[in-house]
Image 1: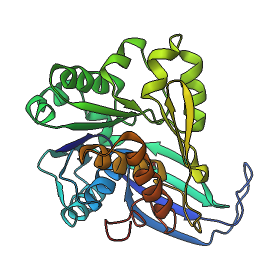
Image 2 (image 1 turned 180 degrees about the vertical axis):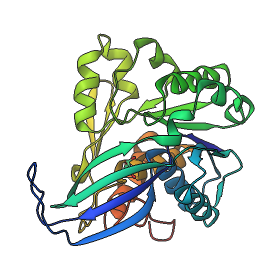
Image 3 (image 1 turned 180 degrees about the horizontal axis):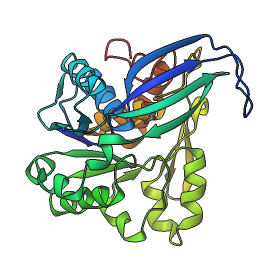
Amino acid sequence: MITVIGSMNMDLVTITNREPALGETVLGENFLTVPGGKGANQAVAAGKLGAPVKMIGCVGDDLFGEQYINHLKGHQINIEHIRSLKNEKTGIASITVWNNDNKIIVVPGANKRITPEMVESHREEILKSSWLLLQFEIPLESVEKALEIAAEGDVNVIVNPAPYHEIPNHWLEKITYLTPNEAEAQQLLSSFANMSSLLPKLIITKGKAGAELFEDGEKVLIPAPKVEAVDTTGAGDTFNGALAVGLFEGMYLKEACQFAVKAASLSVTKLGAQAGMPNRDEL
Ligand code: RIB
């Protein structure tokens, strides 16, 4: 089983040909409301590729929360451990897409209520998993709690340090792979003294250039196929979900990265974080 503990946001996406300057109004091209959030995106990416996936997360008792849970029912994801919290708002992400790229502001809402105590209440579920996926859109104390529980058992952990926050050195021994993008990797590399323990765990996603891993301290580039990019939102999440699937199925790291790079490349060909995530046949 692959378990994801993470965020669920409703993405409010505006497509524009031009970004407004401060104080300026411009007319946009399109607007859509679609499910997102790094946690649920990674769960959906893994589920679409056919792996058994369990999602642990929170939504509010509002329309977005209800819509999100209904949306996940259409995917092969175990949603038993998603809580709908009273008097709370579902997390949202305000996303502007232009020029084949995006800018995102997240308002966490219910995602902030994934507390260490809530993680602790899922101890058994975590320990039953063979891979655990974590990101930083939930409180960091809760990420730490999940790492501690996973380390007590035989659970491999992928940490996607996004949005970036410094990683305490003592977390590293509890992490199997760390998957920053290029900007996050720069910050990560400058905050770690001991490269020999960091590099073997590092997989850097590099957008259309693919991904990079390290073998015996040497960089190995996994190139990406050329695609027509429409919206890059969720590409990193697709990479993480697919990477977990590859490793769960027993692929070697390089092979799992190739699989994940291909999935992430396909994901950018449609609008919305989850719409372009490929199923197995498409991949
Ligand atoms: O990684 C993409 C995701 O980041 C979006 O779906 C948005 O919800 C933000 O969390």
